[in-house]
Image (spheres, rainbow, N blue to C red):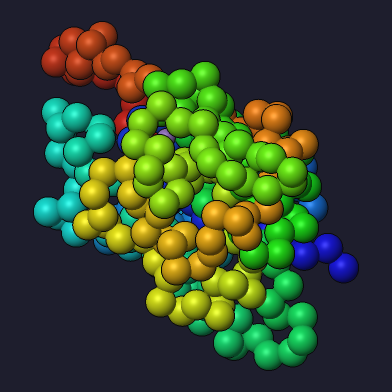
Length: 258
Ligand code: UDP
Ligand code: MN
């Protein structure tokens, strides 16, 4: 049978959340044998996400884990100041390891783990590329790091360095969307997690460092020559008119979920 792809998605409440999760869930509906682990950055599971998941038609696990207050980006902070989604990805890993223990049998570690932020754009092909991951597979990510793309550079079938605009000396100068890890490796290394205190740009490295070395990386997407995932970002909608109408008691009906 096909190895299951476990996709861990951190998500938080904001005006575009339902739109992002709708787009993402409908992409995932086209992927066979996918298990979506949605981790809300919230002290409780919200009705919006709960209802969306129930109706999604996907196999999923719904978790929540609030970001500690001192770690959370405040309104007006530049987006690079603190890493986002860290505690949520770690909570997804915790659930996954525990769930594997609860499911004994030879088959329970056949799988792949991928971290998919809710606002990126995913080609269906990237899931078929990652499905054969033995340890850690890698590929290019488009529209990231102030570049058209970042990617591992492959020579003779091996990753020898990275094409990136910034701090190429980082152990793994890659975006979260540019790699997947085998479930077996995740389970065999129970300590591996994302370090929210890691210096800027080192979040991915903090997780991968203990798991793999550069020459073990498995290049996908035609030796890393194809862009199959994009680090798109959604503009924050302006609510100027909404606020003006609200002041006159004519705002949009709060009972309508957006
Ligand atoms: N995220 C979160 N809590 C936050 C901010 C972001 O859980 O306070 C999630 C977000 O939904 C996304 C991931 O963390 O899935 C990465 O965040 P974002 O897309 O804002 O980061 P960027 O693309 O700017 O690096
Ligand atoms: Mn993003």
